[in-house]
Image (cartoon, rainbow, N blue to C red):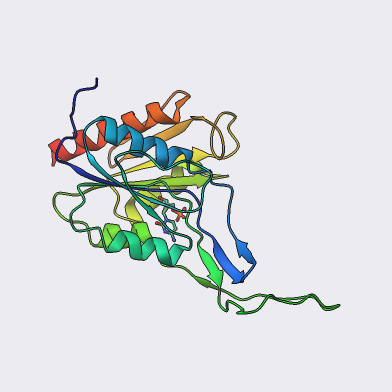
Length: 220
Ligand code: C5P
């Protein structure tokens, strides 16, 4: 039995990919498994928090005693999160949200022809940036960044531009890190601090993230 250090706290976690429809049978998505976000939600529950998990389509089972909110597209995820934002204390955006969506969703299956085809994409709302812009005094925000180059530099820029309190940076090309795995190798960035964490399970990283968010809250 763990000490209930997050009792009375409202924690919102996002997890998984989003799916952006092209037509009734096709979509654009990414390789996110949802494992990291689910692991954070599980850790938050074990520490006694009231947990809301906003999840894109994954193969994972719903967590017990967690308020599960299933969504499909980035716009759905934006709506699900922003409508629940005010009461949250800790917000962790672990989802791999699609940056773009097809401008037009065909209402019938797109037929194949002999021609090449071109799609036009428009930008999705940046949920984390929105959360950062509307951050309240009592809220602590954690973002994620997956990069394939200049990891730390890009991650630090993201921490600042999205007004996060902390950011977890993932290098897609490090073994034992990233999509589908049960472990992660990450760098934890705060305003004046950079920590290269050793390889750990996604659940251990969940505890580390929540512990750090609690520290940040106490320092406020
Ligand atoms: O800008 P980038 O996509 O690399 O930022 C990653 C972080 O921003 C993640 O925490 C992700 O969940 C969040 N994000 C978001 N909405 C988007 C794109 C990313 O909340 N449209």
